[in-house]
Image (cartoon, rainbow, N blue to C red; front, side, top):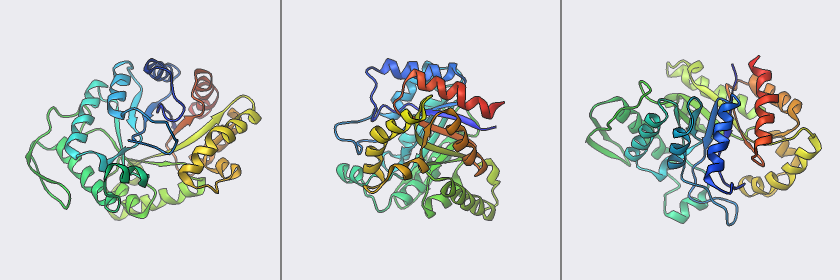
Amino acid sequence: MLRFGVDLTIWPWEYQTFDEILEFAQLAEKFGLDSVWMSDHLMYTVPNKGSLETFSSLAAVAARTKKITIGTKVVCAPFRHPALLAKASVTLDIISNGRFVLGIGAGWFKTEFDAYGFPFDKKVSVTRETVEIVKMLWERDIVNYEGEFFKIKDASCLPKPVQKPHPPIWIGSSGPRMLRLTAKLGDGWVIPNPTVEEFRQKLKTIKKHAHKMGRNSEAIEAACYVYASLSTNSEEAWKTAEEQILPERKRAIGPNLTLERLGEICFIGNPDEWIDRIEEYAKAGADHIIVKIVPTNHEKLRLYAEKVAPYFKE
């Protein structure tokens, strides 16, 4: 059955207080959605806008919810030592009583890497070592690891996670090397703003790699993450997308992005139009849909939860 999640990230459509984030997460749970997520950035493309640190934010969300899955979408592996990442993830898994998903990726915003002095050219290799070490720290009593970037000797990570053998690791990927890494080490896969055909082809690549590696590709949960504009009035939704989503996506993707192209990588329109778009991704192999609703508010969350998601649950 298709699962549905929502992005809680503050940036770039800011809440007034953190209590609003907690309320939004609680409403998502009350409305029957499956998951809530937060992204991970030190700085971003929108001038004078920012976001909160994902692990500490999700800890508060985990403490105020009971059933809904919480996850990072996605942690930038080069920004944290794998030991710290393993410890923070275990802590969240314990606080949430086994509801945590570690979404992890190599990062993409070069300006962010350059600003803080993180090397950009080795980020995929760093991510591979990070995922390998995190899994070992969760599963083993004592860990020794000799890599190009990290050397671990007689290390342990206690306590262990609630989930066994460990929390699911979803790898954010779209390039060839990262898709191969997803097939090798990922329990799930998440890709931002793909077209239906891009989603289909990249998932096919993951499954092909997994088969060659002797893994059951069906065990890798495939998630599609999209920016989204939802309204009972289609024209209003498209106007919002043009005014609020398109300028930011131009900064992130490229200045030549058009509104028509935006419609191919986002969900824009009324609930029926959303259902039609989601069906396309479901047929392409999506198991989980995660949306950043612009603007984020209770009315649009309810519309998503009551008019869109139930169509696929019945």
